Image (cartoon, rainbow, N blue to C red; front, side, top):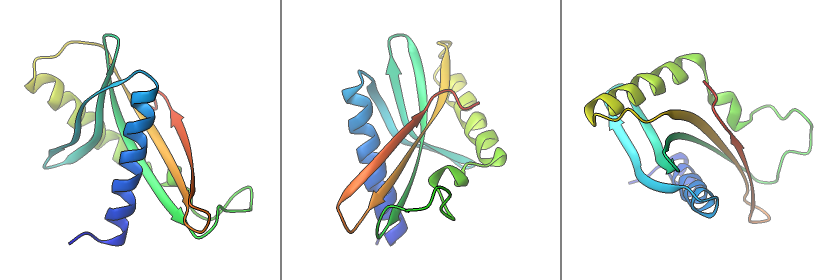
Length: 126
């Protein structure tokens, strides 16, 4: 059974995957897991691998203030980035991949009341 937070996360990941496909990325894998971390989406654009972390927050309405108390971006900590990098390097070594790569962040704010969302793509957040 999924929690509400997991359901929102899954919706966010689906929206991010659709967005990436529209932008010409090929989705290689979703939800790659190791015991110390998970990569939401592994994609490829030309010869580059792109590892994508997706953060989604649902609001009853989009925040009206310039600085709402909680943004999806707030959930990306240095520790989280370090764990993502460790997982990425493990994935590259395990699969004997030497392509260049980057770590991207996609944040999604969902407005539940008006059934809309806003997606922001931050490239190369390392």
